[in-house]
Picture 1 (cartoon, rainbow, N blue to C red):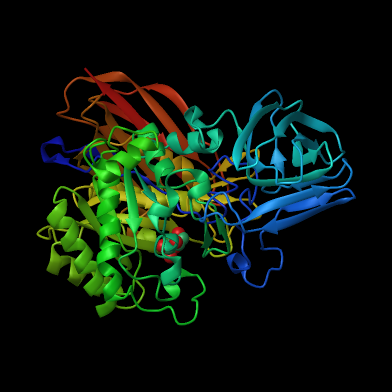
Picture 2 (picture 1 turned 180 degrees about the horizontal axis):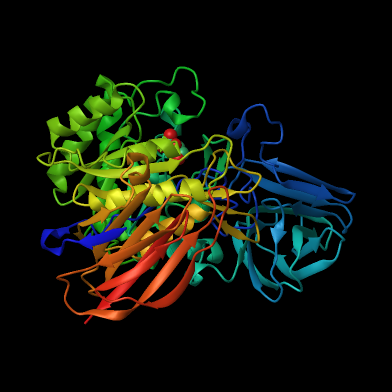
Length: 627
Ligand code: AHR
């Protein structure tokens, strides 16, 4: 084959093409990216988190070990009205302990430090109580130990540090050393080593795995989580900022609980830490109205936010923009952001309104109100509307009609499809009407083979499709694979990009494709022509190339995909591109369709004209420096 670049036809493309979409599905947040190790630290789990499961209540993950003691839940005088439940531990004789099993255990790393904090108080009639805090493994061996002495009559924070003796799977034990009653809430344990050392931070290994993808933006918090499965379940960003004890936790429609410890502040901080644009998505005044949400609809909650409440809802959205961008001294919400620890604005540029919604009159009316309000007050903010899955009913068509009517700057498309679909639709955006104002955010996509995890076949179809997305990077401004994270044994969706458990991160082959595209993104597309010896259309569909240039470094990046069962001798010709150096970096991901290989990087002799063998079933990225 020959791949010949046509630099005279170079066009600018989006430099935000590769991003990530984080949704709290598959235990991605609590028990996942959020580094908190104590499950139900605030005793706020409720039976409605997971209907039909008797364990889902304030005592979930907690129990009492030992005798001559009681453990009860009280609500009469809480730390904060948003956090109304707390534990009352009474011991007649020291020995009993309140225990927490964490999220499938508390995995310690030998030698690492762990920060314990809790709210405690001693009610009238009881005395100061020293509490022995232990991390104990399944054999009963104490792998970390400290004490806190609770003495205050009113709620007060107590802190201590434990050092892990060994890498072990443990549970937490809180053992009062004196007889009497102690009241406890917000019992929290964080590894000292969080991502970038942030307080209330993210799990370092998982966050680093995401950062390694070089995402140019992060969409959050959903997906279905953003609009919820009923009016009461719409994600309210204001409940997720400020002191942890004052945040309002919520039922997660994926069948568990959101502590909101990983909230808007943490999402924005993470974006800043990895140099990505934040893309918050808010409900368009309507919750999920149909099965596109994959959640269970709660009776009688269809329809939108009542018109009488829409002004307040719109104000919440405008407040978010002020919170993110407002002056720390001159604006109310800018001041609130500063008080949380971030005086400088977060520099929000994009805001998503709606997710895969039915495009009904109810939706249109509310979306239009929100869109116009943002446009009027913050014309510089780019609103990303929603058209959802192109293959589900008429909403995609209606969504696009609305986008054209309102001149929405960008819309969010979703598609989960078979490898065959991705192969045969590489021209999806080639056909896009370039006279349209609206750009595309492909906010959710993945190649699906029912019942199977991602493998080389799915990864290669995504790699091939991404060559088409780069080619159409003038209209497709952003893309993100979905879902991003999935905790083993806690997944609600398949496939996902990165699996993990309490100790390990297990990226899929598809992750390496995303990472290679993210690390080797460009802002200029250099068209190229592939000429193949075999002209069969089925063969042509399975071979793709994309050449981009990164104007910051001047590097030229050649991506080559071969989905054929045979290798291809290829000549890459880069005429008319000045200063190409002879040495280049090459990364190859190759393996049979059902395998899950790892990429291999080396240095090769390349230059403006070079030969490259494309192994059977492979994705090759060659990065060339220019002088
Ligand atoms: O990515 C999982 C779900 O798929 C998202 O929550 C939703 O937007 C889509 O239906």
